[in-house]
Image 1 (cartoon, rainbow, N blue to C red):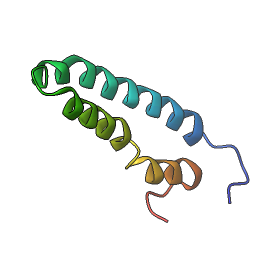
Image 2 (image 1 turned 180 degrees about the vertical axis):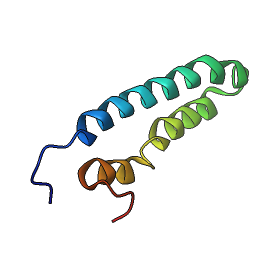
Image 3 (image 1 turned 60 degrees about the vertical axis):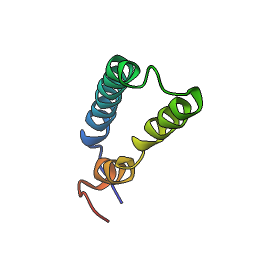
Amino acid sequence: MREEPSARIPLGILGLLVGLTIYAILIARYLPDLIDGWPTLIQTVIYLILGVIWLLPLRRFLIWMETGKWGE
C-alpha cells in the first residue's frame, strides 16, 4: 500500500485522458468512412465493441498508477 504521494497518479490520469482522447478521435475520424454502407445493427455492434475495448488495458494501468508495477 502506498504511504507517500506519488506523481504516478496525476501523470496516469493525464495519460489516460490523452490516450482516450486520441483513441476517440481516431475512431470518430476513420471508422465512419470504413463502415458507412454497412447495416445499422452491425455498425452499432462495432461501436459498442470499440466503446468497451479501451477497458482491457485499464486494470494493469490502474495497478501501475497505484503500485508502480505493471503486474500484480
